[in-house]
Length: 120
Image 1 (cartoon, one colour):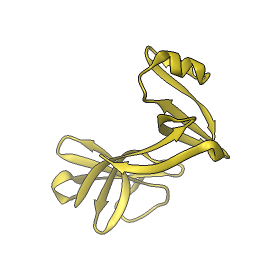
Image 2 (cartoon, helix red, strand yellow):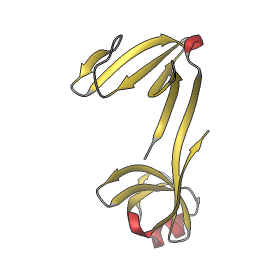
Image 3 (spheres, helix red, strand yellow):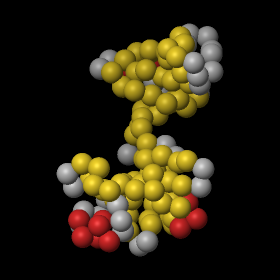
Image 4 (cartoon, helix red, strand yellow):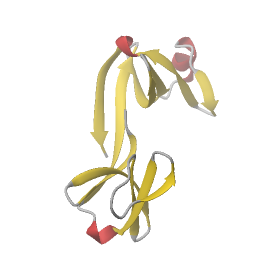
């Protein structure tokens, strides 16, 4: 499940983080031009003008007939955030109020429908 920026650079897609006139590209393994910032995380900073495409990718789904953003996946569970905007519905679903008006919970993956990735 992806929720964040991605960039296409020299024919390959990377997790990314825009930073003004630059874009940070990330990959899990070493490669030319990438520096290890921690084990399993390598970064390369390139000029934004050299990036072929930059987009925000978000995974969405429906659970129990309601719309959600998928934040994470762990084994057979998805961490989801309710986007329907109705507090009583979120409470009926047993979601935690993560922040004011922001409701999250864990949904069994097999109960989720219309799981898809959107480029924003």
